[in-house]
Image (tube, rainbow, N blue to C red; front, side, top):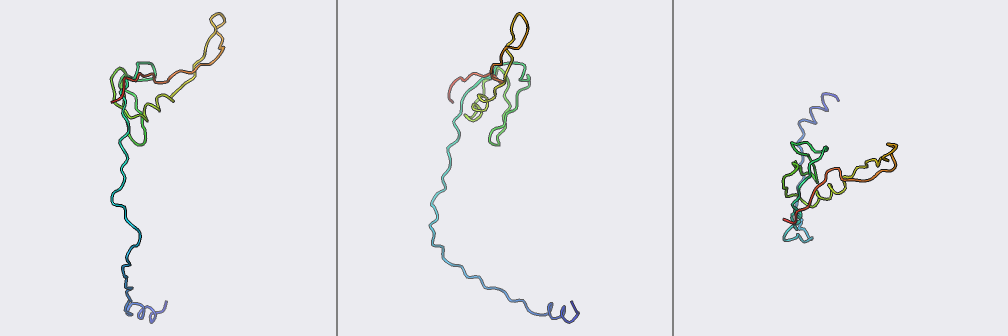
Length: 117
């Protein structure tokens, strides 16, 4: 840009746009619906080789939990669903030949449900 153009650009007054508030025709809800807290369940993790003595970390919907084996815990139903779906396959071994015959499913983190909270 030339110097003359810079001078006129910097010296020229800027026009401000006038903003006029228009009435909103849409209705605004009186209250926002709040979801109920998740259902809680009492459980106990059984001791096994997959769970350290210090506890096992679980994360569900952004919430973190550390469950220790043998201790009663009050957890949301979503964590119970995670535990029920944590399944591993273990081999079924034939006694005489020590050959793998089949695979069976078992819980990776065995637990007991003691009841609702």
